Image 1 (cartoon, helix red, strand yellow):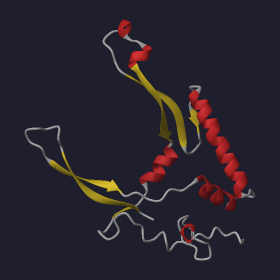
Image 2 (image 1 turned 180 degrees about the vertical axis):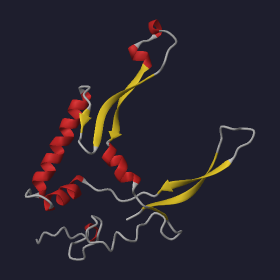
Image 3 (image 1 turned 135 degrees about the horizontal axis):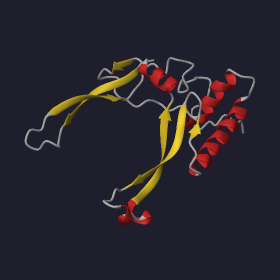
Image 4 (image 1 turned 60 degrees about the horizontal axis):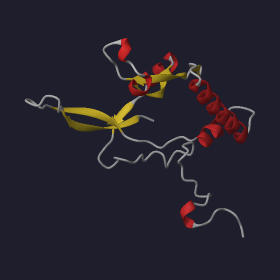
Length: 165
């Protein structure tokens, strides 16, 4: 499936004397794939059950966070590397620098691997038509898509949780 975008108009507000209008491609939001969805997908390709895969993914999440907080670069193989990054304000001399005043915080930085960058470089894109904006008509038709509506499963809004009383 192609990544969907729409064309948006923006004005360059930095040039006060000659503001110029530019047009950009803005990616349309899509549904999220959850840990449960990933666990199901991985389980189908392995001998593990979905709850086992989910447990491994949750422990991986914990290990990545804990090791990155310790200052380590955490390699996730063909996905990329997560590492802590310090955000700080610059000063004119070393003597002026105060940790509490000039360090603004620490945040996670993700560096995708070459394989991940190459995979994204080959993505196809398509502009959405006005009737599609905010919707993906293909997701309801593809039974492999996690948002596929299975008529045999009860919907949360109908009050039926699937348990017989």
